[in-house]
Amino acid sequence: MEHNATLGRSSLRVPRMGIGAMTWGQPKGLARWAPAQLAYGPSDSAAEEERALEVSLAAGVNLIDTAAMYSNGASERRVGELAPGRDVILATKFPPAPFSKLEDYPKSLEASLSRLGRSCIDLYQVHFSSRRLPIPQLMNLMADAVEAGKVTAVGVSNYSAEEMRLAHAELAKRGIPLASNQVQYSLLYRKPEVDGVLDACRELGITLIAYSPLAMGALTGKYSAKTRAGGFRRFLPGFRGKALEAVQPVVEQLRRIGERYSKSPGQVALRWLIENENVLPIPGAKNSRQASENTGALSFSLTLEEIEIIGQATTAWRV
Image 1: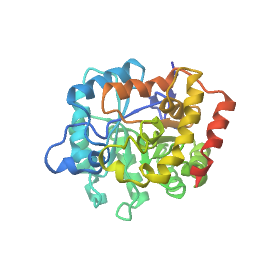
Image 2: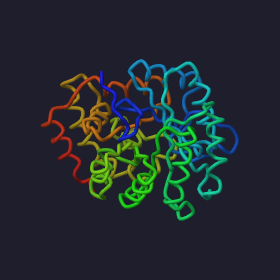
Image 3: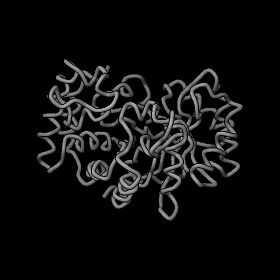
């Protein structure tokens, strides 16, 4: 069983893995056409969402990541329904829409609190950088929310190293740490290692929260030329032709290492991220089976040699 750690230099104690609730909420109407729903399809059912959470909590995984933008608030609402009476850490994100402005912040924060059924959000993150959302002013709004007791820890998402440094410096003026930066990171997307993000996280004591840690499922070994991915994913470059073929030797390497521990390729891929103490993956779970599979990454360790072998097998994805 993994020990909890602090999220960056904040006061928040978190597990070594979270659960991504992007597809939760059984959205209706136009919300069914939100990017997450199109890419992955909806979760299996409301009952399976609850079971996925129960399986995760039983393994000590109690950090749930959502966002105002996911399915037009349906994901936050569902997380809010499931949270009462459970020991959960809730992470969500501002803004609620691509064209939101700074002026929308107070109302958006209150709306997220309302949907989550909370008086305080454990981790409030900026979903993406935008010229409409100047970092200094935005971080001061975040600091105000912390001082008002509405937010415990401040995070960002999809921020470059430079943007992250600016956010960190602005919060530091108010005596508040930048706890995390949530970016795409997996064995098949190793950009944070070369664009300065991972280095800046280490230097500044910021946790890198890794989304798409299984490369949208490509690292599970479920998909091949014969077995196509579902949803919009099947049309993405990584799930077609030569790109899909190139992943197969990686999956085989993960499978060989996993066999030593009775673990699957996906569990080894998640473990490779967890072995980096600065990184916290948040795989999604559409059902309890996926949640159980994900948490299996917490019950074994890789050797330094195995970490090196896996890293070498995926150097082509460092660009």
